[in-house]
Length: 291
Image (cartoon, rainbow, N blue to C red; front, side):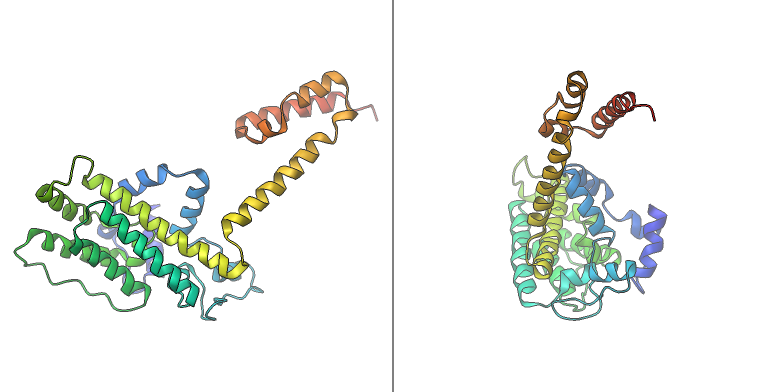
């Protein structure tokens, strides 16, 4: 995976590809810990977000060239993951502003120093609007935290602020928040590891909020509503298929095949369901008439 990401950065980051040092500067540990706390559905969606595999118009066009890769809101080429985050459409802009405010409040709850929260949000905002991002000249500042923020901003610049919005943040942010917590002592529940995990989760929330707004712009409904509708339709089809043969098999076979409620079956694990299907297959094969 490391080799893949470094190689892929040469195609996506242009003149600023990753090298071994850049890869190691990413806080993979806290990213992984935050990822494990999510549901399986959230993990799948975030994996697609982080690796640019969301079904954007550009990606759909690479699969089938009859699809239009343009953004349906602003008509620009191309609608990739970055454009979903940056699209200048009116509703997208309102959602982006509100989501960034939620992210800022999340950092405030973690007792993030204002200078640090402002720096991060300003850099994100500049990237979102396509403006150049400059590292603050604090490398010789007498305040230790400013020197650490300079270093963190520099390493994040190499990683990419687009990658920050995917949860790939620099380890150096840990040093700055550690210094602040030691000086201000906000409480035992505030510590650098927790800050990193919470910040990663908050920035994922920001990016997925933009993806949901994109789906609302494109389909007219929230993606979560669409998924729930599909789930209910699947349950209806499964229930019909389950109940259809009830009267067509013997009482003993019916017990073996239908002793569980369909709602329980739908909640089984894959291993449980596989065992059930194997049992059903044996019973069906035993009851096939010769010829």
